[in-house]
Image (cartoon, rainbow, N blue to C red):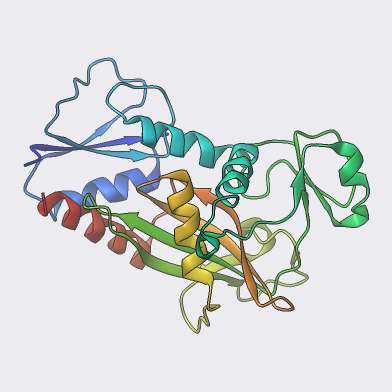
Length: 262
């Protein structure tokens, strides 16, 4: 039985870490602690239930799979490399759709205006993205047209069961005009919603395949849906997604269930 619940965040002041901490205190009988990723005082125990919220630092009390999964997901190039290797496996049902990509600038120039230059491999919310113009970058991705964009949250219980715990879709914020449809972030007027969502048939399977490929216990997969091909494409996995409302509740419930079922 776990005797303590320890949340280690990439940033101790993270709003999501604070909300998760407060929520779990109401759901489990064990004491729940927040620990800084640079803490020198925390002494891990085998009876600790550790929640690694977006931290890829090399610590002895974080499992090798957890470290690798976080490092792979944070780095866009490493993520595409892992997925490409996964897709060479014999089971076609586990294939993960990703956009065409390259590290070769000469190849990227042949894509014309469809090139997406990733100047920062760990960027988020559109940071480090240059569209339509070739610049020096460690990663180039061929732009894939999208009708819709989704975020699928997953969770793997200690018994190995991997499941979807929440699905949201990016939609135009009310009152927002002249929106950029290529980079759909909050700054450009897009917000995650769960009302009136029509999920593509392959959405959840693609998200769970991506989660399995990197070996994460939980996280959020960002996907787009190409209407012409009727396919969902995985873009990346977030290891510390923002938690509010129903999404927060679903994570708290999933962690609480996992803690209690041991």
